Image 1 (cartoon, one colour):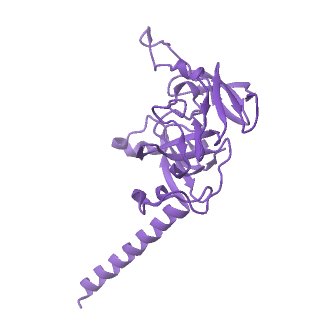
Image 2 (cartoon, one colour; image 1 turned 135 degrees about the horizontal axis):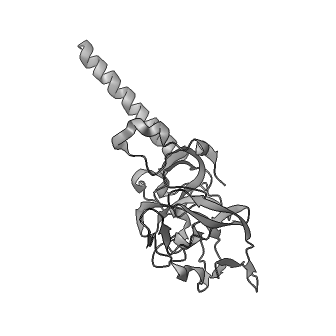
Image 3 (tube, helix red, strand yellow; image 1 turned 90 degrees about the vertical axis):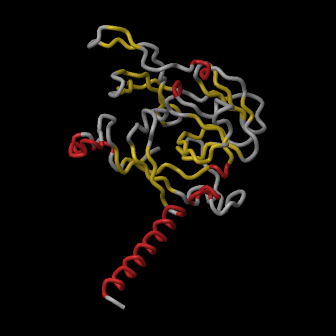
Length: 260
């Protein structure tokens, strides 16, 4: 056997085992994700790169690449806790990943009144209002706007409502995005067995379980893992066409930030 052929075979073996090890780590330990939207502001920003731990809640078919093998339910199952930020597969479109905060557990009833969450637990007769405390505003540098921010069960949420923004440069009023005010007041959601209710932290600009025809209730087997920490973050002005400018667009204060 020639030295070139032997070298190619050895390189192929090394690559094969590297892929096997990477697949095992991705399936059972950690998996990287990127934040594509602002639905989790202020805690997660567009351009954040995350590591998600896979061991927290057990494993389903969606823990594996391409949903293979196709088995039902979960193994080594552990229940997620209210307030966890979780990556899950969008029900009905399992090729799409979503990241939201867990708000409601199986058997509970949820309703939103004037932007406040009310929860009725199993066996309870009345709803309990989840308290909100106003804290300092969140300065969204991308939109150049200060959003009202609240503390809710020790995590930060936004009232992301903004209808119009006055642009000093163009001297005209511009609409920046559409506010979905109907999500501030909802009907009651009775969460079925083995399903969960999620909401984005950017409450007025998040498609989540409040939209039954969209996300709706999330089956436990669709849960992929718990958001662990941000390992890299780059602002939205960065372009790969000018990759040499990367050091000037890294959000250094967000690197290796643990998410809660």
